[in-house]
Each structure stands twice: as structure tokens, then as C-alpha cells.
Image (tube, rainbow, N blue to C red; front, side, top):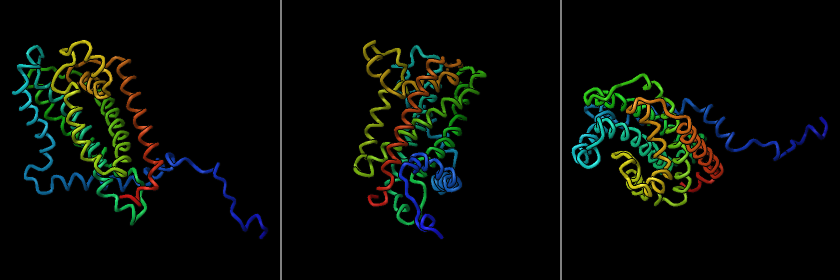
Length: 277
């Protein structure tokens, strides 16, 4: 054996990016992610009498309350106001619950990182998967409410996977980004709940942005990423329209950039998580 064979040559330039390595790892551990999703669904509805039906009843009950309270304020000139509210709620609930779950799973369940090797992004990816399952189930009461309120269900409904994908990308990216901060500052997890509440009322969930004065439309709504994602989500469902390419490109660009930044920041700091959680 010659000397060249006795010593391994270390070349940092040949190392793969941690972000790319994490993508490879999450693919290899996809079965673990599926088990996390299964665990989350079973745990959530384990002792519930109605079980998974709560996924559909929760936004439906919230929609009824909001419709009763705000219909005369925001819905006077809005046809099928109940369906409008519910279409916004199911999208918003997916985003809020997914990002919140990603933070909680990593901060409180990160002790697993000290015991076994697993992709650090598995918590956030599984939270997104769980959220997508709940989102699909939430479409059932939405379609029922549309039928009851006379809002036509058009063939554009089959375009719904596109805004769902963008919502998932945006939620995953933001969840990873905030999770990274929460590892260093645990109070962020609690503060995020307050941010979510304010963010919801700054987004066109229960009202249409057209009712706002023009200055607020530009500075509050159009600088709000959820404005574009909610608009894109409602277009094929509530409005029965094919979204404009400009809306698709803007929403897709926001989602992709958020996911890219969140993934890079998270994977860049992931090696420190096991010492901090």
C-alpha cells in the first residue's frame, strides 16, 4: 500500500452544501416524515369523539361566528359572504397551524436530535404534511357551504393544487426561519401567536381588500405576502376564475424565495440545534 492510499485527502471544496445534503437526507428519511404525520394526526384526534371530523367542523364553526358578527359590516355587498370567509379561513388556518406546529415540534421535541440522527427539517416538513392533510379535509365543508349559499362550483376548482403548493412552500419556509430564531430565543414561539392574530386581521380573510381606503391597500395589503396567497387560493374556488399569470408569478415567487431563505438559514444553523434545544 503506498502512502497515497494510507491517507484520505480532505478537500473542503468538494463538500456538498448543507442545504443540498438536507434535501438528500429528508428524501432518504421520508418514511420517518410519514410516521411523524401519522403520529400527529392520531394524537390530535385520539380521544376525540368526532375524530377527524373536527378538522372540518373547526373552520365551519369559526366561519358561522364570523359571518354572524361581520356579515353586516363587511359582507353587505359580498355575494356568498359565508363561503368567502370560509375560503379564507381554511387557507389561513393551514398557514397558521403549520408554521406554529413547525416551531413547537422543533423547540419542544428537539431532544430527539441528541439521541438519534435524523434530518433537522423533518419536524417542519412533517408539520407541513399534516397541515396539507387537514387542508384537503377542510375543503369538504367549504364546498358544502358554497352549495348552500348558492356560490357556483366551477371546473376551476381543479386548479386548487397550485395555490395549495404555494401555501405549503411559504409556510414551510417561514416555519423554518422562525424555528431557527426560536431555538436561540424561546420567547419567539409565544410572541409568534400575537403576530399571527395581528397578521390575520391585516389580511383579507374576513373582508375584501376593496373596502379599504387606497393608501391602506398599497401599504398594508400589497406588502402582505398572505394577500397574494389568499387571492390566488380564492380565485379558482370562490371566484371560479383562472388566476392571472401575474398573480401566479408573484405568489409563486414569494413562496419560493421564502422557502429558499428559510431552508438556507435553517440548515446553516442546524448543527447547533442539538446543543440548544
